[in-house]
Structure formats: structure tokens, C-alpha cells
Image (cartoon, rainbow, N blue to C red; front, side, top):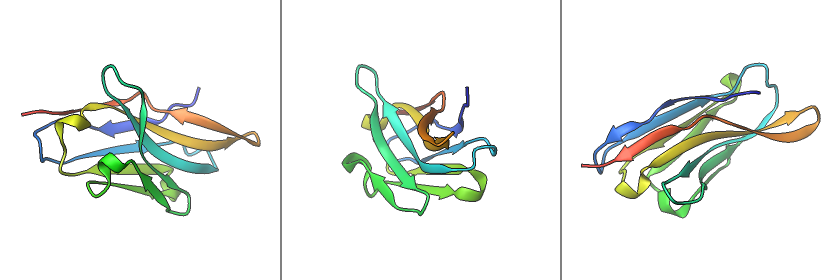
Length: 119
């Protein structure tokens, strides 16, 4: 089972910033999109942002203007820079990669990184 490796997250005060990083194994040669989802207690998992191999990014309305996603194709890595954080951003953040596996598309996930925004 391929696992994405996440780092970052933690506890921050409202208005603060955090950075999440994620890397897929170098053995994966074709990654279509990479992105981040989040799940708050009692809520469904939702898309935060994702980015294509060509660099086109898409954001949830709730994070537009505050979060920035970037990608390094050579390193199979994606970064989510989060600014002006709000308590509503508190959730477990999951890295996602849509890859080519044996000619078909497959989803790989990280184990999740806790982000807590609280004073």
C-alpha cells in the first residue's frame, strides 16, 4: 500500500499561518493531480485545494485568498501554505494524489495532519 508522507500542521492562533507538505514515493512516475482535503469532527471530508501537473489550481471558496497550493513535479511533492487561519479551519488535513497505476487512475492518501486554530 503506497502511503503519502505528510508534514507540518499543529496549533496556531487565529490569524496565524501554517504550512503543510506532502511527498509521494519517487517510484510513482505519473501523478495527475495532487491536493489537500480536510475533515472536521462530525463533518464530511471536503476538498481544500488541488493542483494539476501543469500547475492549474482549484480552491474551496472558504479558503480562496488565504491558502496557496504549489507543486514540485520533480520531487512528487505538494505544499499548502495557509494564512489568516480561522477556527473554522480546524480539521485533519489529508494529502491526496491521483496517479497512473498500471494504466488506470488510482487515489493515494496520507494519514492526515492535525491543524488546530485556537486562542
